[in-house]
Length: 199
Ligand code: 5GP
Image (cartoon, rainbow, N blue to C red):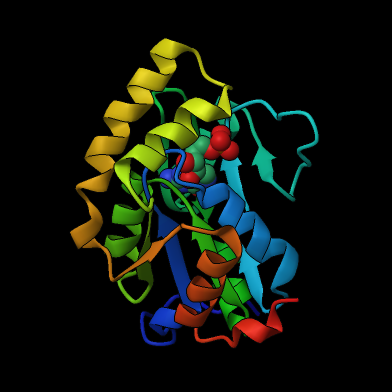
């Protein structure tokens, strides 16, 4: 039986929210953890955006249309959800998180800042971890170096990143993403796991 969320059975290290400014490398760190740390379950979000080449249904996202996403919201299935970069909607299916916790897994949510704030409200036991760039210049270099966005889009993302950096004090912990593997190890330690379990 899936456990109901009573508010009493979740400890901070059971559910960890990883957020941070755009292009800081949240996706890279969480992908590293998904691929190397078997004791961590990386939550799979629902999104209304189209799959990119190589992305698989149920592995990277649950790809749904607007109606289906709205149905999930209306039925209260989302732990949190947000419109990201003024475009598509992304949300965390709540029951899958609860099931994973009940099964003894450490759950990692890689979501945006608006989503992290909602989790603070709806699941206050969860810990919020801010992934920070080593420096502002490094963040700009990562964003422009990625080369996947237009100059206008890059400008929008930089403005967003400035606002997102200012949110760091709302978080329980900060991990600096100077190097993916070490950032992932620090995150795993905050989840109460021995990083040596990540192979
Ligand atoms: P992408 O489209 O590149 O896969 O993801 C774009 C952004 O959406 C990332 O910053 C990621 O953190 C955020 N995101 C992914 N899943 C969720 C979710 O379930 N909820 C929220 N609030 N943001 C999400």
